[in-house]
Figure 1 (cartoon, rainbow, N blue to C red):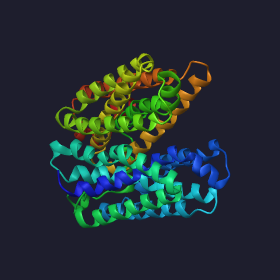
Figure 2 (figure 1 turned 90 degrees about the horizontal axis):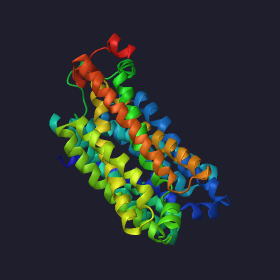
Figure 3 (figure 1 turned 45 degrees about the horizontal axis):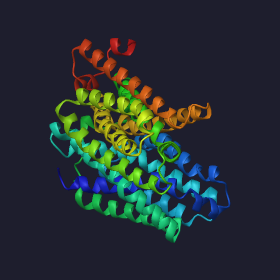
Length: 405
């Protein structure tokens, strides 16, 4: 793997840290601005909304900008957003900073995936995407716990300042290491255009792939969003142990992401089937293992591993289906990840509020994984029926049978 992927991974590390770090700093933010904890939680929800809206929007607006300068510009936006949050005099200004940083999130991962895939041979593209996403997984192992400790000890504003500094380091790395030709079309005729990018979204296979992302990866967050009450009230862990369980979850994410990338390069759809079956089964079993500390800890790791094993496959699947114009679809799939997270968290809250207990979101996640598996099987069946590979489908105007399907 080329060293330039390290620069993309550093950017992913900073983005992953800023996305999840407020989970551990809500009391500090609440006290600082004199708002309630639920109100302080808007720093998480507004960020997710910013990713869903901002990623595709910036991707399409910057479609004619060469991809390396676009990545550099997105890092500038990311730094500005985090600095705005760090110095915010009011809670409203902090939320504005979160939205600015979130706009960079979706487009960076979307465009970064295209660039990462272009840096390696075709048979290694899923692994390259996984290498970039490894920065996000390491953020959950190192960045979030360390940032939480710094914020609790020295103030949350310092944490956001440090995250902004990570963005500056990523900017320097991209500037120095990513080749100018990365992601550049082979000929002027193949240059991306808004019309071509929008046309790629007519392919039903692109939407099936995004649906797999919403339900497959979303299933992970049905359980993990409520891991604190599940582990303390059901498994019997102390409040302090939740941090280390989240580190364990992050370790599972890292292992699953790397393994998923390698297997996806060998056989993308079969590896996706295995990951989704493993995820659904693990989440279903979590309703039982949550009552035993060692079993619960192992399950937390496996949820992270199977959940993130789907990520390289899902991202590459979308890019393959929109191979002629992948930027909007790739960024849209990042929005789909966050849409799935929001949907799963909402559904998990509904079953808890309905009196089904803190383990009930695990069943929500298992069912979502089953829906994703059904979409994956439907997508493969449709592809076999047309008798054409995904790249060939994406390079042509969607046929009438695909649109009708």
